[in-house]
Image (cartoon, rainbow, N blue to C red):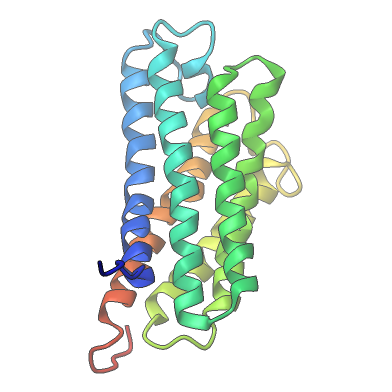
Length: 217
């Protein structure tokens, strides 16, 4: 009997598809949970409160975060496999994949221990994913046909750096306050989570097209 050969390229593309879907799952969960939370104030309240004790249906948010967390971990495997395919560097692949897996673990744990349980702060493990664009840029620096992806990763890294220093009050103190902190958190969350889907799509497309005549995309 012929033993099937593991297709690393196909596996990477399947897992990257999961990465494309993960931010969508998170967004849908937030929108439904917010709609089910009467009087939820997007300007003053944190997203975690959608899964806390004051929410009418906290399971909606928590189930969505848990699912997105698991998907993020699998997406990290996809990014890692893609890096191996393109660079033959297991060290870079492990570094990139580990950041995603840690982020996924943080999301899963935070969904199991809803706000204001102190263990909910495991979600901060997800902040490490801010470094993933930089790691990917270094790993893919010599990879062909990924110019758009590299440009996108650079812009995302800069955007997250700016949001970090502003929301941590390191610059322009007072810009983020009790009256608008919710909006800032949502902006940060959109960039922090959303870039994964876009990057996964571009990387998956690049893997699929790399055997065709070279272009600049």
